[in-house]
Amino acid sequence: MIGMNLLAFLTLLVIAVVVAVVFHFVLRYRFLEGFDAFLGMVAVGWLGAWLGSPVLGHWLLSFQEVYVVPAILGAVTAVFLNVLYWKARAKASRGPLEA
Image (cartoon, rainbow, N blue to C red; front, side):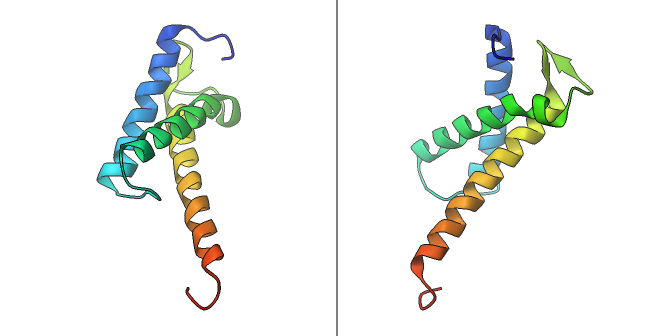
């Protein structure tokens, strides 16, 4: 997937946008507010979707050499772990008296 074509890139981008919309606007699971935080979530989701097939395998539905189910799972995992990391880091930096 290093030398991907435009349609593969756009497929990963659509997956990342859908996952980011669900996490940011529907579930409201986010660390920061605003549109820039949403765009950051899209970027992290795209990276997760891109790594989904190499890490989770090549199975089920394939479109433009993108395996959709592993890409969705990769995007969800990347977005969730990113928000979880920053929430945990913020909580840890507050110290024991403010938690």
